Structure formats: structure tokens, C-alpha cells
Amino acid sequence: MTSPCGSPVTRPLGGAISGILDVPARLAAALTGALDTRGARSCEIPPPCWEPRLAGTCCLELTPGSTATIRVHVSNCGWSRQGFVVTAAGKLAGWLTLSPTSFLLGPQERATMRVTVHAPSGVKPGQTFSAPLLIRGCLDHFVRVEIAVTDCAVRNCCDIDVEDCPDHIHHWYDHFYCPRPCRQVAIRTAGELKNG
Image (tube, rainbow, N blue to C red; front, side, top):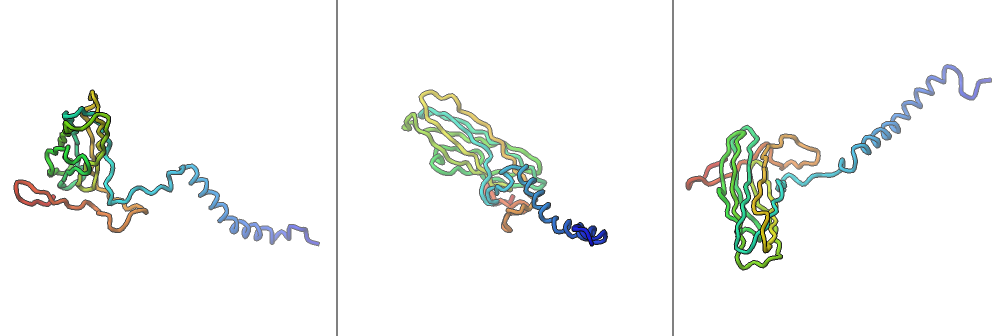
């Protein structure tokens, strides 16, 4: 009579088969544990490549008729010459004076552009305004400008850093039409059109 566990020959074979059948369950358990340790952010998909990337938020306080300054420090961290174009959008576009509006940066160069914000004299204290400042280079970036109109201004200057770096890594969530390496930005310099 054989034992309920089978003969000595069938035990190793049965163990091997059960081990093979057990692999998917162990693999699933290992992956579940790995996903749990990375947290909920592991499944988040970032904004699409064509949307501007947030470079920072500039919060200003202005009294009616006063001015403020935003200094945007732009770095070309790529290894080719890059053109940059800066535009204002939204309700604050008429309040902003940009200098310069376009410029070229060589590889690893850095430049500072100055944005002067002028609040109209007719604006009432207690109002708030928000709009983006767009910087187009290798990638699109934006600065969120938030202005609070007050009786007494405290914050009337801010500095924002924009690191314009080419993204050579193709992620699983990217689309085939993402610009790689950098797209060329056409800018106007001294009356002629130059390609950055």
C-alpha cells in the first residue's frame, strides 16, 4: 500500500509541478507589494507634453496705480542654441510690459528678462487677478501671476527660475507627437526673422 503522499519518485515531480503552478501567485504578490510601497503616486500620469509646464507662482500686492517687477531667469540647459519668446495672456496682459519679448541663448547660457506690472489707477482694493506668463523655448513654460490689489502693498517683486531642458526620455505615457529633442522657435531680431 502506498502512502497518501505518493511514492518517493512522484513526490519530487509533484513538488516541481506545484512550484511551477505557484509562480504566478508569488509574482502577483510580489508586484502588489512593490506597487504598495511606492504609494498612490505610482499610477499618476503627468500633464501631456504639449501643455506648458508650471515654472512657479508669483504673488504680488499692488496699490491702484502702482508698479511691481517680476524677474524671470531663463536657463538654456541644452547643448544647442535656443530661441525664446515670452508673451502675456489673460486679463493681466494689458498690465504687463515685457523686456525683452524674444531672445536667443547659446548652450548652457542664462538670461534675465524683466516684466513690469502696472496696476491701473481705477482698480479697487480687495480685487484679485490671476493670469499666466508664457515662456516658449525648447519646451513651453508658464508663470502663474497672482495680483492682490490692496491699500498697502508689501510684496512688489519676485524672482522665477525657468530651467529649459530638452527631455530626451520617452516615457510610457508620452505621445508620438511630443517634440524630441527641442523644437525650433522662430523669433524676430532687428527686423529679420531668425530661427533659434
